Length: 84
Image (tube, rainbow, N blue to C red; front, side, top):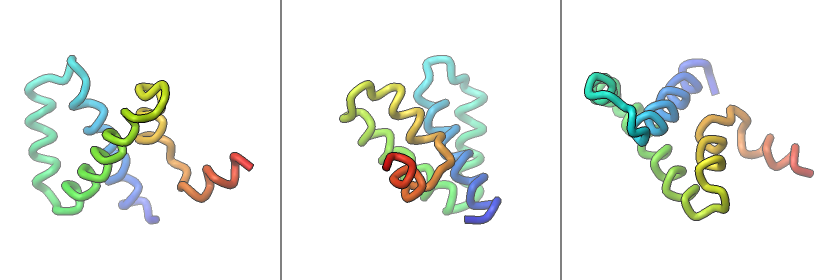
């Protein structure tokens, strides 16, 4: 993964978390609309983040788990290795 890919993933995770927050402003929602329309890749990565969000609601202590799933920069294979 290159820096540009990682930045898009971080932005998608940010928007996923931010848009779920009750304090998200109309200006932020407008900024999100602009961001998602900049590139099909933005929409794709955001959709993947929403899938993670939906899955995380089925996990115990889902609010803490959801944030960790969306923001942990380690790759899944790194997480698996560290849990051994």
